[in-house]
Length: 350
Image (tube, rainbow, N blue to C red; front, side, top):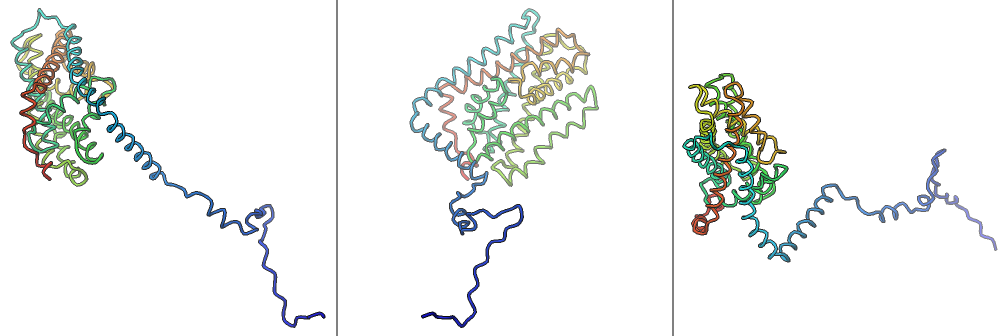
C-alpha cells in the first residue's frame, strides 16, 4: 500500500555557498567549526607571558635563599674585605703617577678633611632621601654598595643600592634615580657658581639645582620618594659639593700653588663639573680618566699641564683615602653597634 503525502514537501537544508576560487573547507561543511575552535588553546597576552616569567624567577630566587643560606653568609663576609682591597688598589695605582717631592702636604691634609666632609655628605644625603633624617644605619650599606662603582660598566653601584630600599621595584628605581639626579644637578650648580667668578657666562646653568625640586612632587605622587626627602638631600649634597670644590682647590694648591686671586674659585668649579661629567659617562668605572681629562681641559690655559695632571691624580688619591677611611670606620664593631641602635625612621614608622 502506497501512502501519498498531501502537503508541501520539506525543503532540504541550504548548502554552504562556495565562491569561485575559494572553496569552503570540508571540516566546516560537516559542522566541525565549533569543535575546532573549542580545541584551540587560549592566546596569552604578552603581559601574561612576562608575568609568568617573573613569577618563576621569584620562585627560583626564594628557593635559592631557602637552600643556600650559608653561601649567602659567606659571600657577605667576603665582600667587605674585598671592597677594602679594591679601594686600596685604586689608590695605589693613582699614587704611582704622582711625584711626591713636589707636594705641599699641609694642603693635602686640608684637602683630605674637605673630602671627608664631602663623602659623609653623600652618605647622609642618601639617608635623608630615603628616610628623611640623618639615619646612621644607612652609612655602612651605602659605603659597601658604592665600592662597586669601580667595576667595569659603571652601573653596579646604583643596582646594588636598589637593595637598600624597601617597597616596589618602582620605589627602588625612583630612589636611585633621584639620588643620581640630585647629585648631578647640585654638583653642576655649585660648580658653575664657583666658575662664574672667572667667567659669568656659566651663571644660567646654576638653575639646574632647581630640577630635583620641580620633579619631587611628581615622584611623591607615584613613589615613596617624598618632596621633603628630596629637599633635605639637596641641601646636604650642596654642603658636600662646596667641600668637594675646596678639596679640589687645595689639591691644586698642593701641587702648583696659587697663581692668581681669581683662579682658586675657578679651580673649585672645574673640579665639581669634572666630577659631574664623570658621573654621566657610565662606561668609566668611578669616572676614572674622564674626570681627569675634563679637569685638565678646563684649566689648561691657567696652569701648566704637568701641574694639572698631578693635581687631578692627587685629588683622586685624596677622595679614595676619604672613602677608605669611612669604609673602615663603619666596619668597626663599636661603630656598627651604635649605628644599629638608631631609632626607626619616619618612613619606616609609616
